[in-house]
Amino acid sequence: MFARQMPDVKHHMLVVDNALPVGHISELGRDVELIGGSNSDWEFSAWDSGIDHIGERLHEYDLVHLATSAFREFTPDHLKLIDSRVVGFLQSLQAALGHIDFYNEPVSLLGIQSQAWLRSSFILMPPKHLKALGSLVSVSSDSPIFSGNPRAPFRDDAPVSEVYKRLLLRWLTGDGTGQGVAWHSRFDLTREALPFFENKARAILNEQMLTNRLLANGCEIVDATWLAGKARRRRSGSRGDIPDWRVQITPRIGPDLAITLSRHKG
Image 1 (cartoon, rainbow, N blue to C red):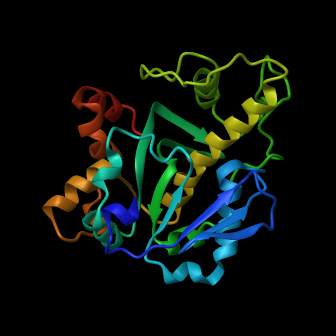
Image 2 (cartoon, rainbow, N blue to C red):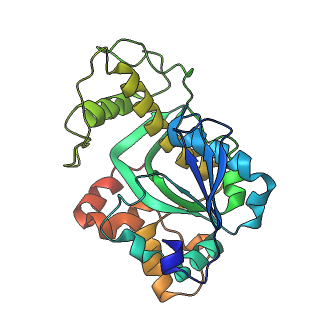
């Protein structure tokens, strides 16, 4: 993507393959490295491995792009929106860029209420904000979340709101979260499927917490479609130029849903 659309932007690629053993290191080509990952916490532990591998070199870059194999799965042609102007504009904002997704109502996780987040499949941010997070795993396998019972998979005292529990169940095993879209890989929650449910739910929780922690550290979130439009009209910006996430996504979701969301701020 970067080589084709931004030939004037230098980049280095590090691929973390969770199917390869930890400790594996090889070169795939010029400025492309490959290392192994544990897959203990899916993409989040993989990114931890990548950050550890890069080490102090991380601060030599202007921006770091976190991506998964699903990085193309946004709105149609979204990648074509990201060019040198967008990258330059993002640097002036000192924010994290991606696709802002949302629930129709606020949820609570680990005592933090939120409603929107950046999809983990594609996030671009300055290295200082990434480094400030420490580990990108916020909800590990030993977190007190799950009960081990497929009939009631969450612990009663789990630090997850009842609304969030219900949305997770509906997204992974039901008809979606009330936005007219269902997950393509939904399944019945049986004893055999319980480990996958827990792993996938933890990945969703870690995705939410990544945005929550960025915001807590003073890093704003920006939607790629919104920023592309902004970059076409201006040469630079500041953090004061970043509106509420509802304003950013209104062109994508339409004004009617935006009005509904404005009544459920979170």
